[in-house]
Length: 195
Image (cartoon, rainbow, N blue to C red):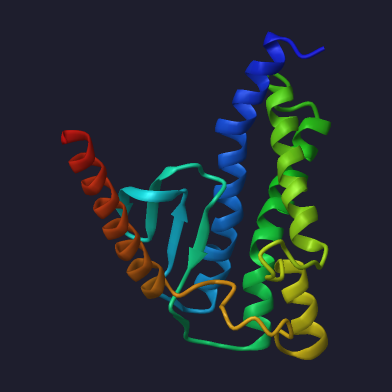
């Protein structure tokens, strides 16, 4: 039976654990791409209007699940570089989950064991769905599919012309266009309510 303690656990999972796992997943791209000399990296958390932008971190107003990493170019492009970048989220969540699991198995982190076990669950969840090669709902390959295609064919073969990791410059331009549209709609709504 779903009780008050389950509701509290759900809130903790949705608004603390899941955002941390998602941030670390996206940071996996950032960390690995830094090794290969990425230019103009950006880690965007959430969607909608910008709340805060500090250096390469861009925090948006709405839900954290829609988060992404972007960059303009790599200094050292190669098949190995792209495979490594797409493996970054898998590796960071796998490392997190295995490390926390080992700590719990060795009697550490016992005070908040349930919290850490949920974090391990979500980390493995993302590892699973990032690793198994598949095409997502929007027709784009997941990281596992990209890695598979890069290993097998040396390139993406999904015939999708959009980049999986968008260019930061393009993302910024799109953001400003979306904000202009939102402001236009808000202005129209304001005028309608005044009449």
